[in-house]
Amino acid sequence: MIKDELDLDGRPNLNLASFVGTYMEREAEALMIENISKNMSDADEYPAMMDIHARCIPIIGNMWGAQKGQHPIGIATTGSSEAIHLGGLAMKRRWQEKREREGKDKSKPNIIMGANAQVALEKFARYFEVEARILPVSKKSHYRLDPDLGRENIDENTIGVFVILGSTYTGQYEPVEEISKTLDDYEAKTGNHIPIHVDAASGGFIAPFTHAKAGFKWNFENPRVCSINTSSHKFGLVYAGLHYLGGTEESYTINFSQPGAQIIAQYYNLIHVGFDGFRSVMENSMANARLLSKSLEATGWYVCISDIHRPKGQFEFNPAKEVWHKEGETSADYNAGLPVVAFTFSDQFKDYSHIKQESNYPLPPNEEKIEILRVVVRESMSLDLLDRLITDICVVTQQMMDTDLTDLQVWQPGQTSLEKQHQSLGKNAHHRKKHGSQRPMSEGVHRSVC
Image (cartoon, rainbow, N blue to C red; front, side):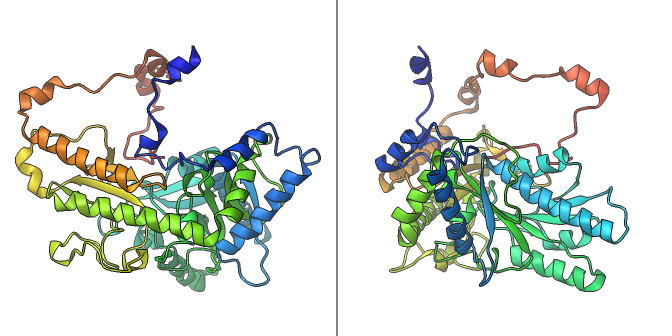
């Protein structure tokens, strides 16, 4: 009965909006099934699994530029939220200890992030009583954290800065090194050291392997970067469940019991796929994402907000400079970023004003007037599937253009199930309005794009 109901779900591999991986080799799947009952918290009972966990830490630490003599400490967590919270807590604790030594007030910590931050970053601030200074993004900042705004909003109570290596909206990397230099200048003037936590949920397995890298020092090569998290279930080629944090403590997970099978699967990928294998997978994903981006813009109907298909240093659509392909090209010939294609209707499409974008992602607050569609190009997006996707987008767009307003208005988005409508509703809208517990959209991050 349950299986029949679940057959109504879509096929995970055709979920083009998700960052979560949907394919693993049969051998890796078998390893996960054989070890699915193992609990990572029971170290004495499963010492071999814990040894494998311990081996993953230096591999990933070296992958992220650990310097000679450094020994990054890490932990597998149950999700990106936990990893981000641990990074934030470490920064808060260091700031508190410093304030105590100096005999200063430690009751008003704040943390800096862009409005494009995934909701888990704001949740850290809410859960652990830190003021979230969420800075607006703009076209000028490429819809990322603006170093100039960061400079204006830091002070002696700033515990750190959350910087994202791969925005979930557009796939663009935030300028870690530029933000770091801003913090260097501030420290030189005031003596206040402000560290950086890099949320590399997606980029942590992209930047180390692609020829494009990130274009700047985003990892432990940058001394201001104190911790990094990534999600193996995104581009680590593992099913959902494993994340890492480089930190300074031996055991500090928020959760206790958690499955260990994903750790084993990650280790399998690291030693079986290897550096060259990961590079091949990531470069192929980037090439496919560029092909999709260029195909969409070639129609004249769409323009891409993402820019991994534009020559390095070019961030605006310029048909005269567009190059479809050149022999031997790699991601290094283009802007660095995730294999993500974020696109919207072009100005040329304004003659078809009766066609509205539906079920899309608005860009972060301050730029929410721009709505985008987003496609995440994972390893399982074959060239054949990509060809079908491009064809279908073109066919559907043409059909909409040939349909008048009256016919389009007949279509109504599908309603969610009754269970979904009643799930976790909490107080009704009248109660929220009356008691002021509902925050306006202009305050903080409210849209979760995973």
